[in-house]
Amino acid sequence: MSNSNLFLSIGKPIKNEYGRTIGKVASFALTPNGKFEAVYIEFSDGQFQKQPMESLRFNGAEITFVSKVKSQAGTLCDQIPLIWRKDEALKDLVDKKKIAPDIYQELHASFENVLTQLKKEAQVIIDESAIEIERCHEEITSLGYAIASLEIEHEIGQVDEESYKTAFNLLQETLRRATSEKTDYELTKSKLSSVLLGDQSQTPQMPPPPPKQPINNKVYAETVTNTATKLPEPPVVVYVKEIGKTGI
Image 1: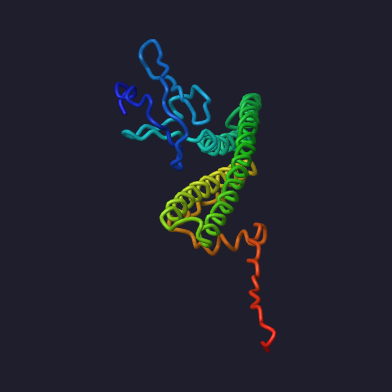
Image 2: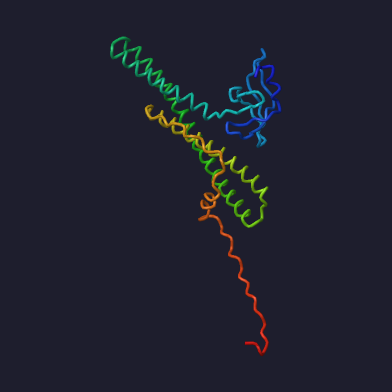
């Protein structure tokens, strides 16, 4: 979107990369010469934050919030190997006597300082990714129980067919998003860990996205069978017919 049209996005919903609505655009911060510098976001939980313009991606009427963890991880995955390669090239140059030892020491120390800082930043992103992975895992587990409960109530006739289909599709879509988000964070954490170990030859590949078709109901029922509370057995009713004195 052009700068003149950005104001039209005020009040519009913002979704994350997985389709979740996370808030809406409240306003923008501009420099004295009219350049858009930041965006004010009212998040769904009521928090009001100022974010850099780079955190949003505008595509027509759609506004997407880009994960800071993923964007920073991508930058670090590029910068750390680059500094390593430069430091290795520097060592080769001094070995070949193409640069003076004192210049090598100064530049090497500079590269070491940069690498140390980048590694600290990478570790922070790894820790944040681990927190997000655990959050997604808890959400996926809760969704599994929610689907199991829905199946039980539908099976005993407490939930009609139309309501069941609506709720099931909603849970399925939420589950798909949570699974995709967890996969992305796992990949981010794995890539950064590999970079810190210096293993560039085996960069993990993005697994295929989870299927969008409904997941087998039986799978969810079996998943929670061992942990979910079972329904009580139906009571046994015995009917006794009174027999007269002459009855046999």
